[in-house]
Length: 338
Image (tube, rainbow, N blue to C red; front, side, top):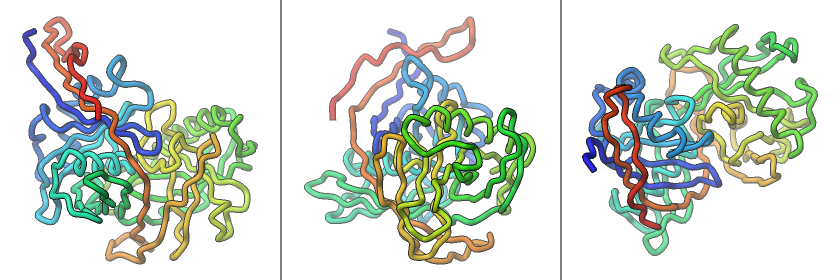
């Protein structure tokens, strides 16, 4: 076959959420910073995202990460995140998948019991500590970019729901926080699809009527995630801080039919957050690291822990379709089980 592009990937999953880690084949994306690379990719190379994320090679919940050389001297690797809905500045489950792939494919120097990897992401520097046993990644603790409360008691008019009051926070992406009683739903598995539907309506309304803008980077100006909070979450009890997500980690961006399920930790120093999927799976994942030097008010650095596993390695090949001037993917001729 006359292939014009061969892309190799490592397929990972973080607590159920997939990340297709691109290890070669796309080349160096132009840009002075990783955020510049993200913008260039979105404008000039988005066909790669569609090719790797859409069916038949991807699916509605597909996420990915493209490995790049770091643009900063204090990082080991750079990452551009891709998914069905676009390219978000940060993806939590994707970062944990990337760190696991880097260790298990020996793309970094592996040190036991902990391998520390510094990642240059479009949102900023993210540090991950990988617990390693016999060369295998057992658990990943990720220190995210500074998170902060952006705006409180905001109101949008949502079609079919009326006026909804929410708080807006930032943790690599923007997250709108909505108590479940404001949408008239009980937090239980049977209402999972309704939460997804309502989340999409709310995020669309926010982006149309009251779009958030990052105070230090105006190019970060969209809300893809809605964090539904169970009753009692105003208190400090971690059991009452529950988010709807297909993955209990859930701090990555999401694709169109699941992007409403985001997670953002509460800004309480010293707290531990319990996140919960509609299936009832729970994960205690958070601990505060304290205030940071970020110019954003009350910014906090946070760490979260989760596991990721490797499914397989894949090789994708494409040829030019001159009729549509796009890359047309051929089947994956070779997969290597992990």
